[in-house]
Image 1: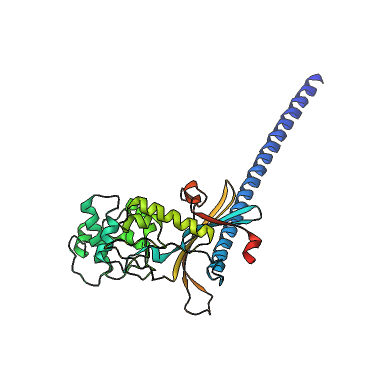
Image 2: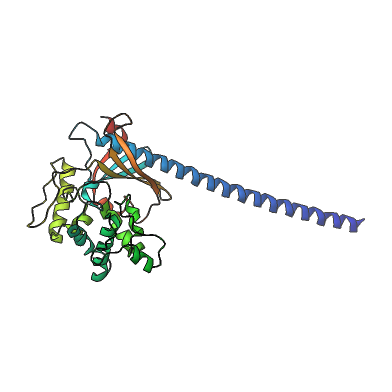
Length: 319
């Protein structure tokens, strides 16, 4: 009888141990699922808030009050909304080099700063010109069909204007590093042969203005200070032999909106908008829209914070 009681006790202990293990496993699974659900919820909320930043930028771009309209010169604006922050940057495409309109000289000025040797810089300029022109004749140091075949590529130059900046990745000689360097500096939407230096980013000014780096730094700081204080945008000092499309404006802008809920809950959206010729479909036409991963170019980084010109509480935008 005692032996049977001992066996029963052991069985009871085994059953209890098994139940404890099962309960612990179930609890751990529930905590993991709750954590995953929370992350998904926060990410969805961050994306929705970043989306709202684009709508806010559109509203401020068409504001009829000249003292409230937001500038498209790369300045950053911050909006506080409940427990979240939104930073928005607007860049005019007129402040970039148009791949389809820039002449050989402007492209050469751009490529001088490319992270490749001088010989490769010349070849890249020629390859860009041959990609966009309509003939099969190779420019000096350029690349046409035979050169693409010799490089083992299964395609040839389009012999048409670039449809997107991303198309540069197909041009002979371009690799990931060169494309990542050039992407923020170029566009296909300005439709201008020159760059409007007045709204160009510091990086574009350094690449093609031909100006002294100290002068560029001074001008950018002056531009930021003017935006913060509501003063007119300063004019870049003229330089002999350098042309700027100062009077020209582009109907296209790039808007970057980044939301910040917490360290692990952020979202970034980059949109290229073009002013609509008619208001039937709204004031803007979407040319490109993409959700991007937050990286070292975050609008909340220390470097980007230098471009912050104004901060708003959400209700202020309606006044």
